[in-house]
Amino acid sequence: MEHNVVDHLFRHHYGKMVAILTRFFGLSYIETIEDAVQDTFIKATSQWRTKIPDNPEGWLNRVAKNRTIDILRSIQAEKNRNLSITTGASSLQIDELFLDHEVADSQLRMIFVACHPSLHPSEQIAFALKTISGFSTKEIAAALLTKEETIVKRLTRAKKSIRENNIQFKYPAPEAIPERMVRVMEVIYLTFNEGFHSTNKEKLIKEDLCGEAIRLCQLLLKKEQFRSGSLYALFALLCFHMSRLESKVSSDNQIVNLKHQDRTKWYFLLIKMGNSAMLKAMDYDDTSVYHYEAAIASEHLNAKTFKDTNWKNISYWYEQLYTFEPNMFTLLNHATVCLQLTDFEKTHQLLKIVDVAELGQRAYLYYGCYAEYYINKGEKELAISFLDKALLETSNSLERNFLMKRRDDITC
Amino acid sequence: MKDFMMIFIGADYQELGLSPEQLQTRMGKWFAWNEKMQKQGIVKGGEALVPSVKRVSGPKRTVTDAPLIEGKELIGGYYIVQAENADAVVKIAEDYPDYDLDGTVEIREVMVFEQ
Image (cartoon, rainbow over the protein chains, first blue to last red):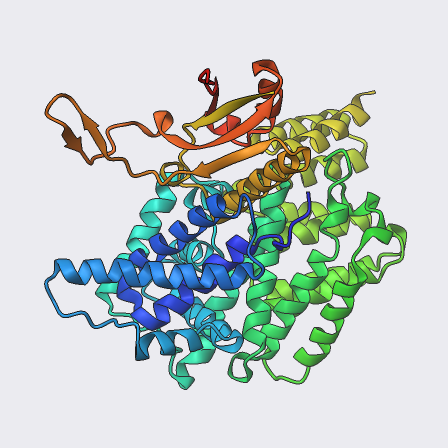
C-alpha cells in the first residue's frame, strides 16, 4: 500500500537528528541523544500505524527534540542541579538548527568528528556508519563482515576517545582541513567499496552503503572550503561505479561480470554527473588515486561493448596508479587487464608479485584471476584447482555461483 | 457478526534493538495492514501499548514497577475486529507483521452479555 514516507527516511533522518541535537547539547551527550532518537522511531512505528502525519519529518524532529530535552532534564534533576534547559529561548534556538542548511552543517561537523585522528580507522568507519548514516550495530557488522560485538566495542572505544580527547563538535582549523580531508575521503571510499564489492548476501545493504558514500561526498562538495580535485575525482569515481551497480546483479540474483553486463542498464545520469565532476577536478592542482581510478572506470564506461574496451589505455592507467601509490589490488587488477590484452606473460609477472595475504577477504579474486590465466593458456586442471581455491575463500553465494559456473564451463 | 480481540504478544521493538531502517519497514507493514482492515470496515478499535508495566497483585495490592515480564510475553497492542467466527479472524491475523520476530497473535472472542 502507498503512504507518503520516502524510502530510508528513518535511516537518513537518524543521522540528521543525532547531528542537530549533538550540535545543540554537545558531544558529551551523544549516547543520550542516540537513545532519544531511537525512541522516536519506535514511537513513530506505533503511532503511524493508523495515520501517517502530513509532515513525517517535522513530526520526527519535534518528537526527537522533546524526547532529548526530557531525558536531559531527568539527568539534571538527578544531579540536583538547576535546569539549564527551558522551553523559552533555547528551544527557539534549537528550532533554527532544523533548517536545511544548518542540518547539512551539523552533519558535516559529525563527519569530521568521525574522522578525527585520535580514532582508529576501524572505529572511524563504524562510528560514521552508526552516527551519520543511521545503521544499527547489526547492520554495520553485516556490512563490514564482522561480529556485532566487535562493532559495539569499536563504537565504545570511539566514544571514549571523543570524551578523553575532549573533541569538539567543530570543523578543523582551516590549515588542518586538507590533511583531515584525506582521511574523510578514505572513509567515504572504504564505505563505498564495502558496498560495491560486498561479499554480503543481502543486496540491499550493498546499495545502502554505496548510496551513503555518495551522499556524504555530495554533502562535502556543497561547501567551498572542502572542495579539491581529489574530492571531485572521488565523487566522479563513485558515480561511475554506481552507474553500473544495477547491472552487476541479474534478475535471478546472479553476479554478472563486466563482459556480460547489459550496458543499456547503466545509469547514464550518474555517468554524466561523474564526467562533469571529473572536469571540475581538473581545475585543481592536486592529484590522487581517485583521479586514476576514475580514469579507469571512465574508460570502461566509454566502451559501447566489452569488445570495444580500450584495454591499452586501462593498462596504462593502472601502471600510473601503481607508480603513484603501490597497492596489491592495483597489481591484481592490472593482471586481469593484461589477460584481456592476451599478454599472458605480463599477467603472470604481475600475479607473481601480488602478496595474497594482503588481499584479505578479496583473496578469491586473486585465485579467480589465476584460474582465468590458466583457462586462457588451456591448462584446465590448474584452472580448476585455482577455482577451487577461490571457492574456499568466499562465502558470498553470488560470487560462489559465478565461480561454480565457471568451473562447470571448463569441465564439460 | 461477532467481536474479536487480536492481542499482540512479544516482539518488543525496543528490546530487539531494531535499526531505523527495519523500524520503517515494520511501520509500513502495520500501516498497510491497518489500511486493508479499514477498507474492509472490520476494525472497531485498537491501540499500541507502551512497554513499561505496573502490576498490582495479591490481597495486599502489592505494586511492582519493574518489567517482570520478559519481552516475549509482553502485550504490545490489540485490535478489536468484527468477523463471522474465530477462523475468519485467523485469516485476518495472517497479515500481522511480526511473526518473524517471534511475535504471537492471540485471538479472543468478546463476550456478549444477555440483556
